[in-house]
Structure formats: structure tokens, C-alpha cells
Length: 410
Image (tube, rainbow, N blue to C red; front, side, top):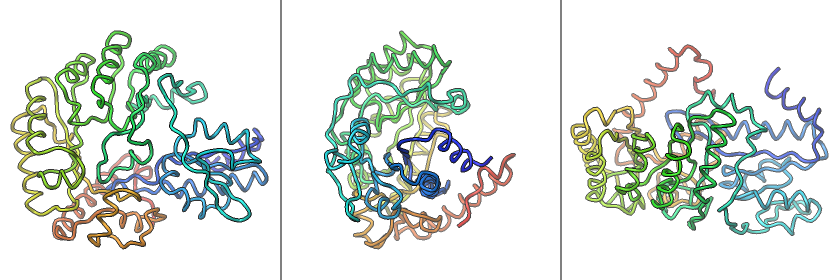
């Protein structure tokens, strides 16, 4: 049976009073790994409505919250939309299906019009419970590296030009108690045999003291569980590095995103090249620590001099770290433009995208138009994109399972 047939059968057997669908990602956000997840979401909604004529259909998730009004307009089969965090909004909605105007953080339809009750209140998460792992096929997830997400906080104090995290989770940081975090990790290990977890925070090591407490507890309670997380240069303190390496962690992948002082400032990184070099030197002095980087090769203010400075920095770091800087730890990509971000404003200002562009793509052609292509680097973009796209096609066509990976049709 197909996934669509399985979904219909499950709904018919279960006979739900309401059906909720979460949309986490609109697309891959990766120009060289193109796929639009939104299309699958739209098809799922249609299937659900087709076999559930009278029950409420509810949408939510971070992807939905980036385009709530547009998604509600484009999908009339959705009755309610949960905006941002759903732990409070969703159960409250189920208790007030006939009076949705009383529920904060909700989009709903009223007399043919779309209404919004306003953003939900932020609530503390110190003792937030873990996911209901018992309803998942945990063994299926164990086949993928670091597939088990652990949340240690919400919110991000930074406002990087391209990033939507602060829009989705607020700039106020709310922490989970380290004891609760590690308790969840221990449960996953003891009950399900999980040996790898990924911290899903926008940034794991800010504030650094909170991350250090978690890592020290992990060393004591779950020393055999490996972890990954997004790291920020400002949280690479000597104490954090030591605590991380004590748990067996050694690959510090930094999202510098850009290089040169002017570009770092434009991208909202809040760092200088001098500070970046200090962080890199601190890690170099801590063998066997390895280093990796994420960079955008295009952005506002970029010139060919920017690319040369970036290439020289990578070369110097490689020579300094040797085998501790593997080129496979180097990710070079383009910025996916998202609504409400500073990069979106700059892209319109610099005429990279038109002001009326649809940033919710339905095809790969639309998807490609949602990236920041600096017009001053047209020749570089032509060759760089062409080379990587051809390399990807070659790798995928020689994969043992090419049908799973080849790009979708336009």
C-alpha cells in the first residue's frame, strides 16, 4: 500500500474527533539538495479532508508559523492554525472548538474570513516533559545518526540576518533544568537503547554555564551517549570545551557564516575577524579537538575580495589544524531567504528578489529563486553552482538507490 492509502486506512480505523498535521520544514533550505516539503503537506491535508468530511483539521509547526496566513488562505481545508508553540494552544483549542476566539495563538475561520487571536504567551519550560516516545517506532529512528532530538532551551539572544529562530521562539531564553534534560537522555538509553542524541536548540552552548552543567551531568549519568548540537563562537569558553571533550565530543563545527568585519556586521554575527581567530586558536590548542565551519558563499556586501579572504582563512586553518580540520567538515552554501528576516529586507533593497516574491515555493524553479545571489558575484555563482550541481547529480546517479535521492520533477 502507498503512504496515502495507509493514512486513509489509519484514519478510517481510528475515527478521530480531530486531525492535526505539523509542518516543520517548508523545504530543505539547501540549494544543492532541493526538495519542497510543503507540497507533501498540501497533499496530506487534501487526503485527510477527503476522508474526514466533518472533523476539524488543524495545522501547526514551525514551517506553518513562518507562513501562517498564506498557508491558511491556500488550504481552505484547514480549519484551525496553531501559531508558534502548541503545548498550551492545542489542548486549549480542543476544549474550545466552538469558541476558538478564546484561545491565544490561533488562526481560525469566521464567517468566511480569517481571524487571528494574537501570539501565544511564553510559558516556562524548566520542567517540560519529554516527548511521548512510546508512541513512536523508536527502532526505526535508531537507523539514522543523532535522530533523537533533545531540547534544553527555547529562544535565541542573537538576531543573525538570515535566521528565523528568534522569530519562532523569541529572543528571551527559557531554560530546561539540566537534571530534566539528562533524565530524558538516560531514559532513552535505558529504555530504548539510544546511544546518540542531538540537541535541537538554536544554539546549545549559550548560555555556556547551562550547557556545561548538562555535559557534566551527562558525563556522570550517561557517559556512553554521544551528542551533537549547534554551537556559537561566543560560547566556546575553556570550561565548555573541556566539559564537551570529557563527554567524548571533539568536532566543534562553527557557523561563522561569513568573513571580513564588514560582512560579519551586516550578517548580524556580533563578532570581528580578530575574535574569530581567537576562538580558532583556542581550539587549536586543545588536541584532539577538531574544527569545522559553515559558510555562506554569497551575501549582502560580498565581493571577490570577501571570497579571497574566506579562502585564505580556510587554507590557514587547514595548515594550522592539519588532519584535525577535515574538508568534509566544511559546508559552503547559499542563504535561503525567509520572510520577516533582515536578509529578506536587504534582498529586496539590493534587488536580489522582487518585493512581491512568493517565498513559499511549490516547485524547484520557485525554490531556487528564494536564495540570495549577490549580483556582484555573477561569474562565481555561474561556475560554483554549475560544478556542485553536476557533482551532486553524478554522486546520486551512481548511488545504489538513486530513486530515493534524485531531485524531484519540476
